[in-house]
Length: 489
Image 1 (cartoon, rainbow, N blue to C red):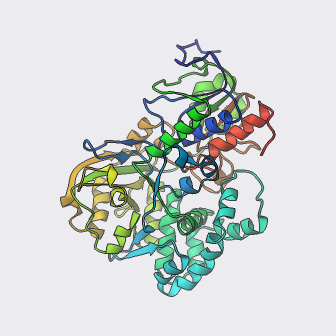
Image 2: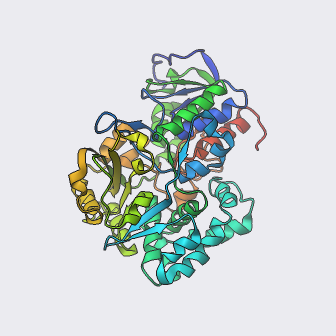
């Protein structure tokens, strides 16, 4: 039964070639790829500003600009699609800290991931040579490797290079570390990076996250956007408008009938929300398959306004925007396992970000901001504030005395803020071994639905989470081939 028609979107015309619902980086990327082929394109966003998980707001006090979700964007900087768009022409400027990442051990010592593989290896003691043998061949060919990693279901154009990567990447992080390293530093460094997957580190393919992000650090750095992550979205919107696309904000879409007529509809939403909006146009089989997508743990995030820079025990920590507070491989693995088991570790893996050391425009003169998150059980209302601040205080005694204001967001609040973060899961669906490749379900074209004119373009499709726009790009290419009969590139 068709739902009753609701009030329509306030837009310039009654019919478009393509309408995109959701204005995160993937929705905007899809819109740009369609618009630059000459198609009339509209993006509809529920909130008052575009951005999805890439917004910047005054969460604590006036003048303190906090990124609501992501801040550090190695894959955003290196994204093949964003590189092709040359977003710097539309106002985006990148800031590169001297070191991409510092990992803090239990004694407060910081181990730096440097831009140079050789310099990083020198920090890793007896495991330096093994780290170099593992990472150097991949980092040296990162510009060839990354497009294959972000290519979704497409065959690699450099199969031997991709096979070399795959042999290591498909292992669990714990297994790869035990087979490769004898000491604690290299395994701890890669474990912290692999924990970005939000998958237990004894699961297959968790090494892929550590390898991709570590090699990105060496090849392109872990940069931040000047002025906040909203600058990425502002540039994408400017790019879209330059190609004639339109954006309407402040209009929640509850049913597809609210949208203008279009030849194709693309949804930058979680699968369950696609079913809620367009379910009566989708087959029962398709609905069942995508609703079975599994989601991983959520996050608990804290933002701080600070009266000064973080007083790290080890000054090395001040060389990077990203600091991992987590100790050894065993400690990281234990913390991640706890979140999956439905509890919060007493010493959780904490990802800490300090952007104003390198971009002072985000806070009033002489002041700073910082944020941190840890992983918590899916959909949890757990308050991890004390656990997070205890981890920070161990590495930076006196941190609490610098705090002027705090803002905390639990997993439930995060899901309410952005429905794509189901249960607080910021990855678009757990990227375990099956869903790393087949998401949201096992389909030859993961972007196409059972309806010829409806497509999914969110992080719930390959290549998954991250601010890189490639899910949107590939969904747009699918729609162009199927609906608009454009030859694939």
